Image 1 (tube, rainbow, N blue to C red):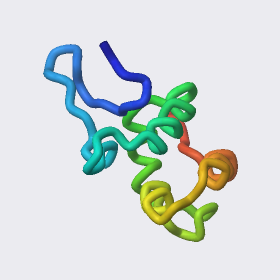
Image 2: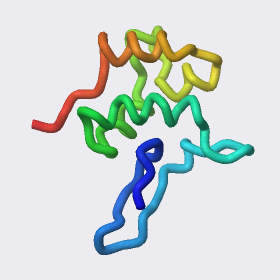
Image 3: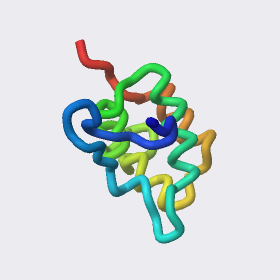
Image 4: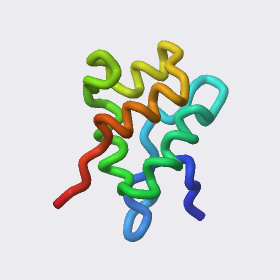
Length: 90
């Protein structure tokens, strides 16, 4: 069963693989999981993963993952999604 708070690759023909950045020393990063659930409503897992690791002008050039690691709050990341969010594949 797929978890809505985790991004993954594969699963149909190959074993599911999860991006390491979703986990910390205590397990699943819950703050990131909430953002992922929001983004997955409109974007596939690879688009979300790509957006999370790219510098974002709405976050002063930080990546969304970097901003989250430095204590960015959910509202800051929501604004980044609204202003410079993922771009869906054509």
